[in-house]
Length: 170
Image 1: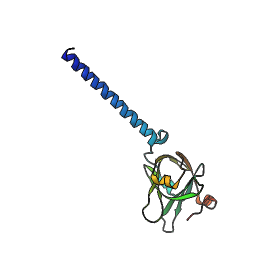
Image 2: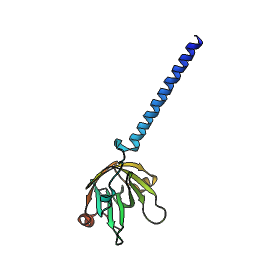
Image 3: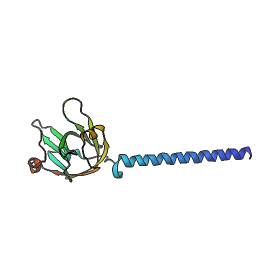
């Protein structure tokens, strides 16, 4: 073979190898997105925090996940999640809602709080709030919690549900 032909074959082989590498990278990235963001849901760019932070109780359709927002005497709000564990008991967790990202769930108590899970907001409207499971941290496994991959929470007034909760408020 002539030197020019060898060079052309080498360049063509390099281009094909780079194209295959790029396709592998894109495939891995898309696979990661499907795992990290369940069912292909992307995080909301913005959710209206006002209606979420009003004094209310949010209950998942299956009754395994609660967010309780209560107003304190000083006017501030306390938000806690109660999540069902494998043994049927409920674990109290701290909750913070981010405008664009969703819900962060952390341990409560004295000392350093640890991350448990992060849920992304899929949609949020007046009395319905849809969340998708995004990340689970080590503490999630230790506490043996059962958070479904997708949650639909319904909003209730505090007076409606406060006395019929399946756990005791601390």
